[in-house]
Each structure stands twice: as C-alpha cells, then as structure tokens.
Image (cartoon, rainbow, N blue to C red):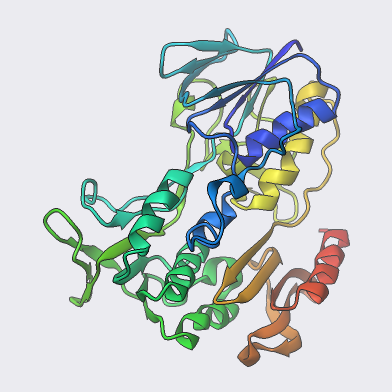
Length: 387
C-alpha cells in the first residue's frame, strides 16, 4: 500500500492519519477536508468558544511540532468515489488516487425546512456556525432552542450564562429519553428549570415567522414563542451522499463491521458517518461522540493495513460527556435494553449522583452528574464486563 487517502479532516480523520503513521505506514498520505480549516475540537463550540472564553487557536487539535508528512487538501469537497480506479473525485475536478481509503466525512446538522435565507436562524456543527452564533448571542435578546438534546442543552446553558432570555422546545415528552431513558432524561433536563430556562416538551414546531429575520417560533399546539435568535438542534445526518453508486453499502451512514471495514476492500470508515457493528448490542449504530472519533480509527487502520486480517477487538462502550449550567454530566454504555436504573451514590435532587443501568442484573450503562471519580471507576468496570 503506497498511497492512502483520508476523506475528512476533523477529529476522526486526523486520528486515522495519526494511527497510520503510528502503525508503521510510511507511504503517501493525503487528507481531504471540505472545510478550509485545519482540524479543530468541536465540543467547545457549544460551550467555551460560544461564550467567548477561548479563541480559535485554543481549538486546534494539532500541536505545533506535529508533522504527519501528509498532503492536506482543505476546502476540497469529495463528490464521488470511483472504486474501480480507487479514486476520490473532488468538486473542483481533481481526483485523488489511493490504494487505501479512510472515509471520515462526518455528519451535517439537520435544518428546518423553509428556513433558508431567514436571518437569525442557526445550526451548530462547524467553526463557521459557531462564529456566526457567537456574534449574535453577544447582542442579547430572546433565544429559542429547538431540540432538547445535548447540543441544544449546552447552547441553552451558554446563552443563559450570557444573560439571554432562553426557551427550549422539545417534541418528545422527555428530553434526552433516547440516550438516557425516561427517568434520567427527566432528571438531567430539569437543569433548565433549575436556572429559570423555559422548557416546553411534547410539542412540535410548525414553523418560524418573520419576513427577512425570524421573530417567533410557531408551535403545533397554536402557541407562539417570540424569538430574536433561533438555534435548531434536531440531530444530524451522515455525510455519505457522495458515496452513492460507489459500491459502498450505506445504511444510516457507511455500514461497517466491528473493525471499520466496509463492503469494499481497502476502504474503511470512522467517525460520525460510520455505522459500526456493535457486538455489545448486536446491531449497527453510529456513535456521534468525541471518544468514538478518537479511539476507533486505531482499529480501522489496523484493518486497512492488514488487508482485513487483523482481529477486531470489542469496542469500548460508548462514552460521552456534557457540561450544562456548571454541572458535569458523564455517560457510558447503552441505556436501551436496560430493565432497571438505580442511584448508587448521591441524590438526583442535589444534581450530584451516580446511577447504574442494569439488564438482568448486569450493568450495561452508567450515568453521573458531578461525580467524575466514581464514574471513571464504573466506566472501567463496564468496559471489562463481557457483553
């Protein structure tokens, strides 16, 4: 293998490039990114960067002395994969030929239909998104966050600290019920009420009003919520359209084995666009978390360099964290399928506790609020527990 192309220049792509060099690959390495920026850290975009506490230089993922001996093609969007010739086609007409390909094109934020061109409406996925939203939040006013997931909650928390009037609208009866379950989703989302942020649950959004700039969010139950700024946080979809017709099997992302291999030889996928097989739960799933983008490229690169001969190890249970209203929230494992959840330490009412999810008596997930030490012990135990 004399040439490898990594398509995607965020954390997953950078991690794959690093892993290639760490595992002994010394051939040509091309990293392709559709954004013009060098790899940067995304979690602070909804928190410290949005609040103006850190600058763009603080987001950099590469130390000054790192040199991966790579060719960086930034601001270059991939538009197709010619599997017969092992070529990645770019929007500017160029082609990058490679013996091995790492797909790391990530995901893009979902938008509300009919809102294009309406000023004051934002999504938050990229550095450019965060720049635009930060400038608007600095002006103050009334913010409505559509979607009570982790990104929406973090934006609400940041905006509250900046002094804005904040409302969160969530279509589901309980925010975060998907990743955390109904009970603990309710506990964590109660942080909004603790700080005077309005939370409207169980109601969908009919649309937005405003001629050139948004002035209100229209709810399906007939209510109107005034808004100077709207942030849409209703999830993301994988950036895999460019792979249509390539022979790569797609199913809510790039369908992969437990080692990142795709349906094409010498092509692996990592990060938010990759739907890996998870032996813990027996299904394919996309893991849209920082740790997955950081850890899983090691296995995918081993698969790529070995020609698929490397034995896949069991992936660590998914882990993510969130900082909201000064509270550290940490979660590892799979809440879905748990038949019980018990508080093992602290008290939910104090917003400082640890809860363990179990299935048939065996721990399958753990959630903590402001309990980082005991959480890390449980996370290690969870990773050591056979699935």
